[in-house]
Structures are given as C-alpha cells and as structure tokens.
Length: 494
Image (cartoon, rainbow, N blue to C red; front, side):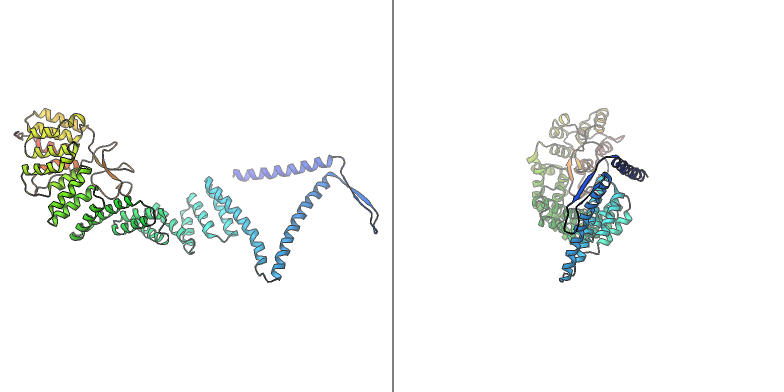
C-alpha cells in the first residue's frame, strides 16, 4: 500500500519536473543557429533552433544512435544466419533476455539477503521466465518461499529440482531440511542417505546422516558414515577412532539386548581397543572378558582405564570380576586397582565404601582422609555419615551430615558438552540435543545431580555380589534407608 502510493508520488514528481523544465526552456532567449554551406545544387541557408526544440533534437539524436547500434547488431546476426549460422539470430535476442534475467536474479538475491521474501519471489519469477537456469532460479525461489512461510511452494520447487541431474542434490537437500523441521526423521533418514549417495563429500550431509543414524540406532550404518568422513578428510583420525569406538560400543549394546552375545563381546572389545579411555567401553569389554573366562584381561582393561580417569562404573565392573570373595580379599584386590590414582577423590571414596562394607569404620575414615574438608560433595558427606553411624555417633550427628549433603556440591555426572544436559547413564548421543559423543564425566555447572551411578555405588559395593542393589535411589536416600531406619541398631565398629 505505502509502496504503491510512493510510486504514484514519484511519477507525479517526475512529470512535474519535466513540465517545469520545458516551461523554463520556453522562456529562455536565444538558441543555436545552424549554417549549411552552398553546394552545386543548393544555395547556402541557415536556421535557428530555440532551446526547447534543441533539447528535444539532442534527445532524438541519442535515441537514434542507440537504435543504429541495435540495428547494426541485428544486421550482423542476419548476415551470420545467411552465411549458415542457424542460431545467430536467436543468440542475439537470447543475449538481451539473459542480461535482463541475470539482472532480475541479482535483485532477487539482494532482496533475499535483506530479508524481503516477497520481492525476492517476484524477482525470482521474472528471472525464471528470462533464464533457463533452474539450479539458480529454483533455489532462490524455494528459499524466498521458505522466508515468507510458504513451505508448500518451497517443497514443490524442491521436487521440480529432483528432475534434473544438475539440481537433484539441491532438491534432496532442501526436502531433507523440510522433513527435519517437521520432525519426520524416518523420511529425513532416507533423504539423507540419498543426498549422501549423490555427494559423499558434503560435510553437512555427512553430519546430518550420522545424527539421524544414531537416533535410529543404525550403528553399522553410522560407522560407515564415519569411515566416509575420514576418507574425505572431514574428520581427524584421532576423533574418528574415538567416535568409531562410541558407535561400536553402541552396536555391541544393541546386539547384547538381542541376545547375540558372541558378536556383542567382539564389538565391545574392539571399542575398548579403539578408545581405551572410554569408560563404558572399558566396563563392557571387561564384562566380555569375564564371560569368556579371561578375568586377567578384564583386570588389565579396567586398570588401564582407571589410570586415565577413576570412575564408579569401573569400580563396579572391577568388583564383579570375582564373585563371592570376602571383604578382605576384595579390599586387597582393589588396592592394586587404586594404587595408580591414590589421591583421586574417587579412589578415596571407593576405598572408604569398601571398608564400610567390611565394617572397618576407622579404616574407612582414614581412606576418606580430609576429602570432606577439602571437597564436601554429596557422596563424600554421605560416606562420612555412614562412617559416623558405624562408629556409634548419635543420630543427630548423622542426620546433620545428611542435611549438609542435600545442599552440597554435586558429584561428577555425565554432562553434555554442547547443551549442558545431565544424564544418569552414558549414551552415544545426548538425550536432549542429539549431539554425538558429547557426554563427559564432570561436575554439572548448575542443577541437581541425577544420582544414578553415584547413588548406586555404596549399596553395590556393600551388598553381596548376588544381591540386586537399589540404583534408582539417590545417595543420601540410600544411606538413610540403610543406616537410619527407625528401630535399627548401629553397626559396631571393629
């Protein structure tokens, strides 16, 4: 509405300006005198042009010159056509049409960059009429349609692009983005596979396909995509090994759920070989070695992982190597595991939990050391509460420690490096943002702990191997349920 009014006002202003200019020229005195010399047939004569006719004659001269150049070009094209160049005349007219088309395309791109979707659509339509370049005009039309919210038109354009070999990838990629926006991951996966087949070097397509395959738990396909990224230089070799280990581990988990134990064992051991520092791979590989009757290999795997990063899951896997052992034998065996990281907080807490299971509370206090003073986390305070209760401290003292634990800093959890999401269990992709291999064992910046693994450690190490602990309870609730149950007697200290 405003733009139409502005165009009318501009037109009126131009007409008024021309009229005022013509009036001013009519009022001017003088002019230009043209003298024509005498010839054998005519006498000499002269004539005078007034200012207004002079300007009009000058404009007519410019127009005539432009027409002469155009006619000369057309004449050259006709002569070439006569000489056998059958496309000479069509090229003459096509050249002008292409120039106009590219001008319209340029204006469409400028409108698209400035966010004016409607103008971009109009200019793209004009460019499409002038040019036979669907790979250019179709893409601009689709993007302009998406900018204006017309996803149906954009989808129609993308489908038209599928018909041409030159534009097929653009069409597939456009439809892929639409399906992802709609949440149709099943169709998006098929389109991503098609796009990857057309352009296996395209990094965005590789990443999209990998993410979709992980979401659908197609781990074998994801490993193939990873290999393609490595082959085409889109992924450093060290990162490829790590992520290949993640995919292999995830595939091993799926095979184990399906009852394919032997294949799962092979893949979990391969995942540990590719990435020895990957904690879930180490625990699953240790389990596979134990199932194969190779406890020494399981011990070696877990010791190697513990030296890189002590973790409760490693301790639980190490405890499961020997079933039915006495508390003394377990403590002795764990000393060999924890020797390499004796000062690590995880080592101190694991050893304290083992001594609590053996009801050696003074030794548990010594193992915990000054951890509560230096780093009073939920789990450290919970363990100290168990020690105090075991040594016969009043319930008020124990409850005071548990109360402190409720507001204490959180223990490490599986935290997504991309979005900060906290997960109770490790997975190949973040449950929140879907980022692959983004979970790190660290303390959350904010928020409450999930209490999954940390809460399960004390009853897991304390209970006999055949008992099923209660991993769903957070650490404070586990200890309170175990040692502060009304009417229960405090365990005696050794």
